[in-house]
Length: 392
Ligand SMILES: C[S@@+](CC[C@H](N)C(=O)[O-])C[C@H]1O[C@@H](n2cnc3c(N)ncnc32)[C@H](O)[C@@H]1O
Image 1 (tube, rainbow, N blue to C red):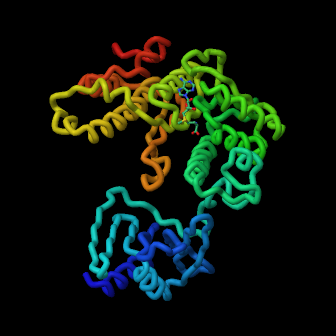
Image 2 (image 1 turned 90 degrees about the horizontal axis):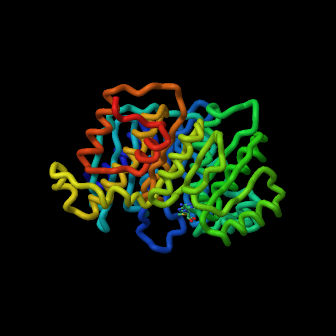
Image 3 (image 1 turned 90 degrees about the vertical axis):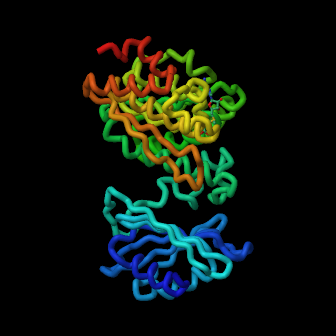
């Protein structure tokens, strides 16, 4: 395919009804201030436009281009950038341009068709927006006093926003007639704890009581000081080990963000014990299974250290999700942040239900576990607390 044909093809495809979104990146000049350009279709006054979002180091700028002018705009951008990713209802494409504008085109079919939503601002960019100054984000060093998100903190800002979206989606599962009890385990500097407090208490006016728990004394003291200075009532920070934290009888929501290795399992086990209605957990450093997995059937895969590490992490999270479903949760593994921003991109979401699991699901779980030779920490915890029964 020639360069001109590429522009024709992209302009045609991006202005038909199957286009979902795209990213144009890899500037040919290092000094280019626009690092990447995101593209999505929108409808303005009944007419299709493409919205180009120019991502500078600190700010975003938007330009809405009518369908008739998209060809010219793409031609201009593809002179400047070497890479295009685009997603359509039934296909993902990846284009790489060489120094001499040689086109490499790769495409993958998508089997579950997506629906294209054209309403302008179909989703608010962020629940916490990146120009409003938030006192807690300023105190935590994420924003400067004028509300600008600091460059080195943008990933964290993105993560907490995404997490808040999941919290927002889960609100229908939480009680409406009493205080909502929320625990953040392994809260660390507590970006998430403060953000969820701000969103639920200050923006939504909900009656909540939040605790952040972490091993690090100095960090927790700093969080306490910030909460006190900002007059955040019903928000406390405790120093302690998740595994020794047995203070609660009932909790409504348990969250974890990057609680290391089995600290995630400790949190999940407690959430189940306390009957939490909502569990949202983004794991990290899933090392447990790496040291356990042994399987002649998987030897082709396991002999590569890198693959073994990734596979162990994926198997750990699959086992976690399965165990949660075996104890009555509707559990899903969802994309947290896209891979471009962090490899720690899986979120475990579990809503408590009254569902009973079938004997078949127990057998499937055991077969998978035994094939790997895994002895999952979470399984032991759930068996011990009499929430899990595997002998059916
Ligand atoms: C990678 S940090 C993440 C902190 C925070 N959630 C965030 O996303 O910014 C992991 C935190 O988990 C805490 N942690 C690990 N194991 C723990 C345990 N057993 N009990 C309490 N906290 C723990 C660590 O002290 C650390 O602050």
